[in-house]
Image 1 (spheres, rainbow, N blue to C red):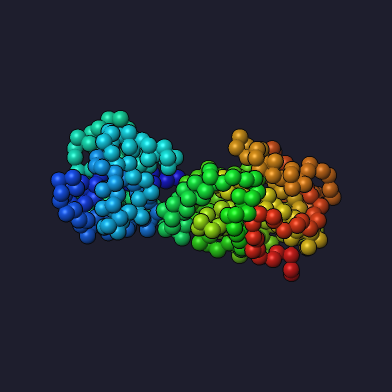
Image 2: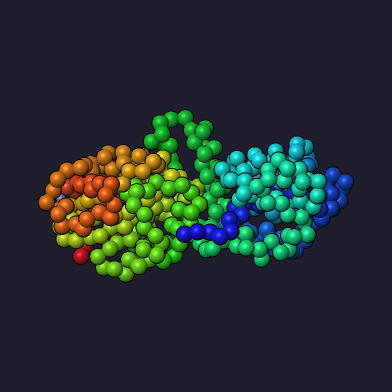
Length: 358
Ligand SMILES: [Zn+2]
């Protein structure tokens, strides 16, 4: 899928005479215009993150954002006396966003020119353009899903989670338990597939099979009785991780064929891939079927090959392999396991659809 226009992923706001009317340090009773407020709320609901780059004293400026009831919308605030370009660069670095996905709004032509000079890929807008931002194509994502609507909350939850992890004194398994992780595996709906497509477009992804299936391919299989399209979501006590994985499975009486397994790199450290594999193995065991996974090595999925091997998949010969169609690609390996039930995951609570019951 191609995106003709790169969508802005973060808008960086100046404060004085841009976000609010007036100059805080001159004692103005600054206020936010209704059109500006609508723009802030609208960008947020489209999953576009927002940040502040302002020449002000940090304490009073942030307190004013809180008093105006908008502080929660900003995931970063660089308020100080350094150059704006340095602030915008730091925001992009901390969000891990490419410069061409960042927009900068400032009423001062000199500030826009300074940012444009040092960060030529950042898109700069004058304050007068704020009322029309939501009508521009670069602020209009192709699809707005449940995950994009809460992207800012997911980002803020992750900041709190990472801060806790850094201060956590103990084994990592104990930290994982303290998160109270919950994974849900369910039959995918069309809405889930939009979330998965969004995930693949926005983040690098651990494609465990290395075999690509388009959104349209998966959609066409939603109603196919031989195929299971599965959506994986996760949450913990800090909030939702959103959609984190997708699996495509063709079931049969003798063998289940895992054609696609992809999980978000965001949840690798939580053992998400291994949990899904162990669950599939247990389900296949209950159905009395062997399990075969397509695996095509790529530059980026080595860690998922490890997860397969660790779960017990091997390059072994079995009569069930003869019943499968030939792989689409010559370098696709078929990893096989004769399933036996696995213990429930130790560090998360799993809620999953039952596949084995006919
Ligand atoms: Zn077999």
